[in-house]
Length: 115
Image (cartoon, rainbow, N blue to C red; front, side, top):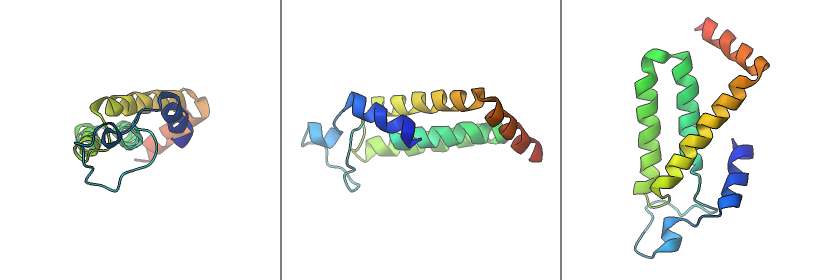
């Protein structure tokens, strides 16, 4: 995930909300680095995507939790809403890219069969 995320963060170089306006007071220790795309959102949606393919009956619960986690970053004052959209998009692209690899797709299918 880091190999995808960090180049994007460096490319866009978006400051965090609390760096843009003093009205935003983060309720978490202020993270260092750029805001866009949200790495926490990317991670949550990446995991929700894979888990929902393995256990489809829990799809809605996995994505609801991913969305709660993502939104908590905005509420905490460390991300803009559009950072979350970037994280979701990056997660979807990463999942598609990984599953396009025949070896990864075969391994994933084997895991699904074990469940």
